[in-house]
Image (cartoon, rainbow, N blue to C red; front, side, top):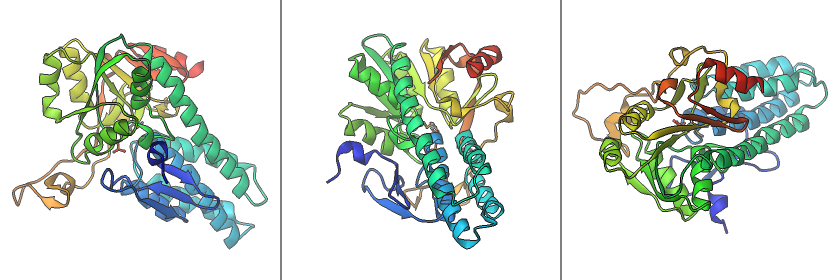
Amino acid sequence: MMTSSDNTQAILWEGDHLRLLDQRLLPQRVVYLDITDVKTAADAITDMVVRGAPAIGITAAYAIVLAAGQRYREDAANWRSLIESDLQYLAASRPTAINLFWAIGRMRERMASLSANPVNVLLDEAIAIHEEDIAANKKMGELGAALINANAGVLTHCNAGALATGGYGTALGVIRSASAAGKLRQVYADETRPWLQGARLTAWELLQDHIPVTLIVEGAAAALMQTGAVQWFIVGSDRIAANGDVANKIGTYAGAILAKHHGLKVMVVAPTSTIDMNVASGADIPIEARDGAEILSLNKQVVAAEGSGAWNPVFDVTPAALIDAIVTEKGVVERPDAAKMAALMAS
Ligand code: MRU
């Protein structure tokens, strides 16, 4: 029988293959998919079986273990050149989460020195990436919770929880730690159209841990803030630029503007694997646009008037000037800018 913490494990390695919790089916059904090849793993990322920046990176690392085994069996002398097309296929699975490219880069570096059967060494590296992510989340949980005063109300957006990471979560890691410290009066979650990560995943995940949660539609965020019920807007990130601009789920930027207008503080919680020092500002972050059909329908039922067009960018960029704190496993950057981000990354 599964315990609640088993339930929120998005990614498992089962001896010789990957198991992914199919997040498209939550919360109605808890179904794991057994994945034995790199192409299926990459398609699972594209199709939102697994999602959330750190979880995408960890999945890619395990997918490279599958690819290496496959290519080594195919041709032991040339597996390193054969695997290149697999790495490219994986890299094309989703464009915004830098953790995907960070994990591919780290696995590629590990590969460079290998000549014998690469599977065990690469598996150790993938497990290290997975375990380091959980440890980073726990550290960020502590650091972020320390910023929150007692009796606080918090609002989160999308799902930046155990489901989106190796475990524990980034934004939800802070909420878990603050809740355990008895600091939270109420947690609110945006429903997060069109994939409903807030309604389906964040609410479910918090309830598994017996943390009460109240859902709102994004359109209610301003009215909620106007009541004075929330003091913090807490989110994760898919990519943070060198100047502290933050790409995250579409609607984060709107939430941050509303937060500033109403005197709330904005906290972004993300491991340093999410920081991309190669992009100077948010303007250079590639923003994924998905099929407009995702917003013309709800639960596969068409809801829009026939003939409507649709614009479906799934991330936006919140300028650093709207952010009070970026919480990483290496420390907290308050009121981020390029110099502070560089100092963090050099530390
Ligand atoms: O489209 P998704 O569900 O992959 O988007 C996820 C988010 O926007 C998360 O906030 C982000 O990846 C951080 S997850 C710790």
